[in-house]
Image (cartoon, rainbow, N blue to C red; front, side, top):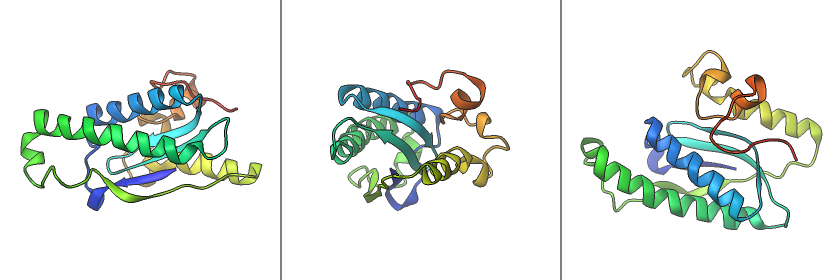
Length: 154
């Protein structure tokens, strides 16, 4: 799944905003018995590879993740980043209406998506090594470190 901030705004620049995203991701996955395979929270978009035991759970999950984080991010922006929040109307959405989901059916495509997700901060020149980006599952896979929510292969 991939989704972006409305008008590609950098609403996820702060660590607190990224922590909100990870917290809600973990909570919503647990509620639906889903699993996070990989994720990365970027300054203006999110990538995640998730699995659910029942077909068609992903659209409900994504809707709930975006709805809950919209509320929390607006509260955070209006309380702690007032100057930034004044640059636009908080009546505007947090997320672009579209999101992109992609079903993975082959191991080759899975490996391609896994590498893409972890290397996103490197391609964006935010870090030199994927493990240096704190809001990604890379540190779990390459260093065995906690990343704020359970991740792993199914």
